[in-house]
Length: 352
Picture 1 (spheres, rainbow, N blue to C red):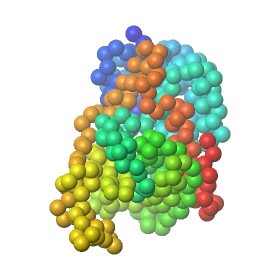
Picture 2 (cartoon, helix red, strand yellow):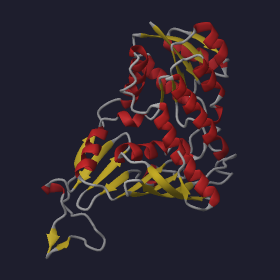
Picture 3 (cartoon, rainbow, N blue to C red):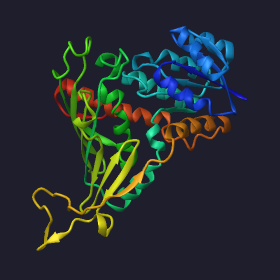
Picture 4 (tube, rainbow, N blue to C red):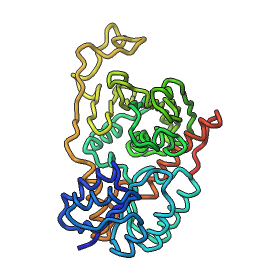
């Protein structure tokens, strides 16, 4: 039975552990965290394995067959280099790194070794993606209006842009990745602007990041997109987070991890014409009786993501991994380019 180790026993590590305990064909052999007590709690939950506060000591002691790396964005580098040196297949949570030179070198070494490696873009495994891709195939998309709004996560490193990368890089990267995945095209240029001042030090001591950002994106296939994202929300009613894909006669609302709703694809969902003018012309208001076709999420895509990586290691066949390491690098380059645009005040051509 192959041995699995996990580095980083925080919230995202706990998310993965909840999946691992469902699998009976692997040994949960080691858990590592700089706070040993957290690793010990993982051992208790798993019912197996040993706790460590040093990942090299863990590698020496248990010789794992695969590793899940679930550490904050600024902690990447040494762990991956040692993992690659030992030829251990690994799964790393996004973003791969905040420094593109580091990320490039990691990708180079992974490719050079031919190592099975993947990243945590779990949303690629959601069953709603089948309906979304069908819509895009049948209704050529011209433009996308996308957004993600929420509050400030509790992790202390998250509220400082220097250590998290900001919301666009650390959270909204999921939507950015899904734009690439669904459109089947790479983003070419980004122009991003940031706003601050809504979240005060009194409200959140030590907060030093963007409250919201807005990005204009151009894709190689000619599609344009706007992405607005913010962590200013005090209540879920403050914004309706989704991505709307628009064609000339139909549209699709893609709600991450939830559902796809299409309009204009059948008679019930088409807006009616009056005297040859589209109802609501000028505002493009949908028809009062418009009924969308709903495709709800019905699978645990996080479990499927982890299971796919583990199966790849067990079989040696990585072809079913939907977010291999080198591809995940491109989503990181996408979001880091947005930060570069914010800093320079100019459009940025993405360098892969």
